[in-house]
Length: 354
Image (cartoon, rainbow, N blue to C red; front, top):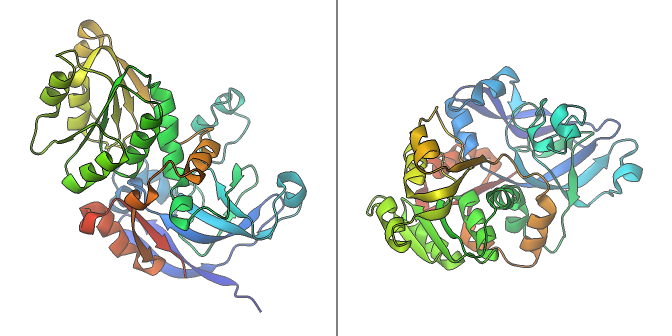
């Protein structure tokens, strides 16, 4: 008889994640039970652990809750009606988008489902993927993933979809000078997507030389270690004093955001994807009266999963440079510490359930 229990990392409160045995879920009508193959650690996950960011109280409000919104798995059991409605079969490799839109609010009806007012995100308002099994609920957006795609590439779909969405929002053009700030997993995904747009010049900035080495291997024309060089001065030198057309902010740093405003040319565009641990202030007179800048936010990866899967399948993404570590799910604490401290050249850290 199959086990009625499974192992998962459960959020109970601030600084209180537990690897424990919990009931294995059963799919209801319209639901899909997925056996999880691999999960990723997002920059938001350590913030949830430490109680940082605007979103941590939301998670604690729904605790106990299984963590994790980056995952890849295969169909294990289908709820009533799913096979006919979604065309899924047992064994299909599938990914669910990282929001379950309500389909009824103003934003969903306007096609902006990533801004859904109800906003159910795995690991935040519903059980996530840091487990042996997970329910993809009725109404979730599910994509089949080719079996030929490596497991490292498959687990990178969610962050890369976010990166693709951000670059599309930024509107990168052929003659643009683009600065990427933050060479983490999503930042390097942005660099990859931006490179495919063939801009005039790509400048990547980070605090770690090993990440900048990866950025160069992916296609950055110039790299800047902001601990050793002045990023704003370097960008101004590379643009004859004008500044960058676009800055892609992928680190969630108040200092980086201020520098972005300083290094942009007049009428330049700042794309903000970073998740900030606290509120951040800017000199709004520079944004309005002096430079007439555009500031654009990007949230999740709406409409970008098929593109991400296609580009990954075609080998356009150097996943082997980005997905650097994998731990057993039971070693989640070591995995989070590896992300936070960037140990042993860590970029994208993943975990494998038992």
